[in-house]
Image (cartoon, rainbow, N blue to C red; front, side, top):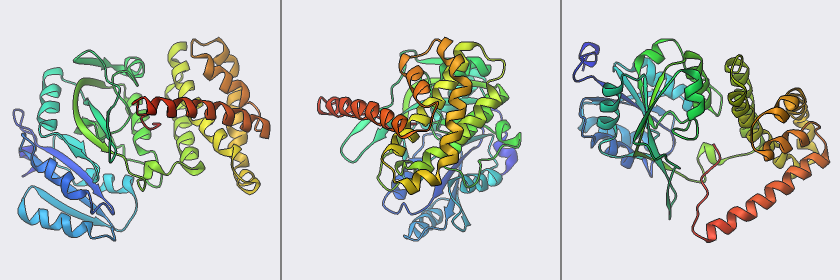
Length: 353
């Protein structure tokens, strides 16, 4: 399919980007779910990111069977680099992402494209399910069937109510990517970085409550390895995002961004409590930076309308001491016990995002 075909008004081309690295047990299900879409005008760009488990051969076999598939190779550079290569190759009017170990509903792209056409939005977001081996849990959805969010303030208000940050539960108009944005290579939280870039753009986001994406949870995935490095990277991205988009926002929205910072910081404090002295020394600058941030913004947090728990976290984390680490650890231990009790009652906790 040519780029001109992809720009036809009534039947636009959708480019689906699938990064693949060591997911041989899952990638066939992923590809099958994309090929089974009720909307057929797709180009499927599989970026093969240096796998060592035979995933590449599975992808090549599918490419031989369906001319819509194109396999692009790179040495292992990670998810961001793989997605960027896919974006550079894409010819579609619209862009979708599917991770190689996930799968999608047969009508996902037809439903999202119809919603995009009807609303005129730059991005359309759907709901998704967390998929464990023995459990399937719906991401907390919303009652409205659909809602339009326009501009930075409405989109911020809608976060965690109408949508979450992942790029794969969305259909993106190519104009966002043509603005020059690309995922940060070497970072662990590329979806969060893309979210702040979109906030800076102040675009339009249309949210529908159709459950169309299945997000597989597995122990070996990148998002499951939640150590200090994982959260340190998230802290840096969110801190940069806060300073980039927070200026001039109303107090409640600044409070929401400050709450996101707290969510990351107390995870770091909790891990610090059980780390060795060598690990603490190695991350001393990170702890100092977080404490300085908490000291700088604690007066604002005290006055803001936000949960009392966040204010307590900010108060404790103003000093990177062993006592502060242990206090956060104790609070998190109590929360963990409550969560485990909830799981026994059939309430599965979704991962921290």
